[in-house]
View 1 (spheres, helix red, strand yellow):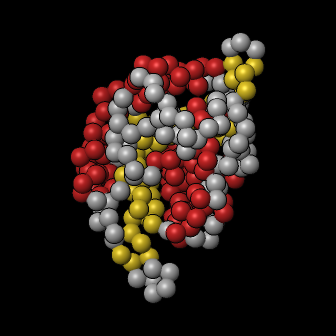
View 2: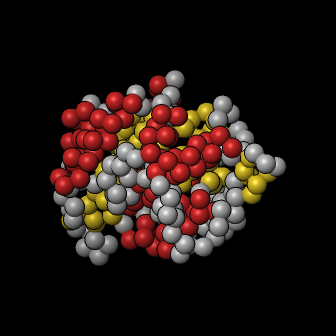
View 3: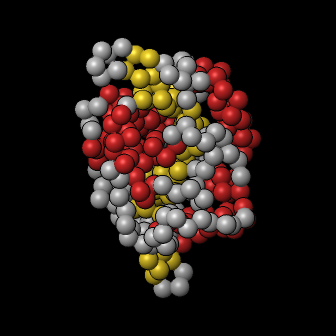
Length: 256
């Protein structure tokens, strides 16, 4: 891990807010900008990162103590339990301690080499896997993903408070599913309410990195096993996502 410059976790206490979409497309954007990037899928029970990046190779054992991560078509090194056996229908019936142990192995035994960024897609909540990662990555930071609706806000606040209690720095908030612009009439509809991420950022005095709208290209790219940021670079969501990444890189540069 000492050869990795930046380690960034993507998380939220709430499931279904788009953490994996943000994590995968952040990794793809950084790789497209010629950074060396790796990604860990820490959602052990529901891993999807390998699918969204089109990875079909397994993690390979190197000797007795280390694992070689496969590389996605975008040039991203990937570690996921799904790459230990390529059967997407097989459930993982592991208890929390076992899942946390696997996460520690991903941190300690995967041969990442020299990376500029390691992106970690966290599972929802503050269970054993998330805690293991947060405690190991306190020197870097967390990006909190939320949606605009008020129902999500209590869980988003829990995420902020949990990170601060552990001592994990918060890089900022990303508001996902932030409105939908009709491609036919250009009218914007706030399907999931308005301003939740912005209110959270102001309440806790943390940066709002960006607001990513609902866009059919996000779904299309995921179904094609590709990041939307590279497949549909002219889409509304891709343009807003690039602004978000620019804000993140500016903050990281400023905090050095």
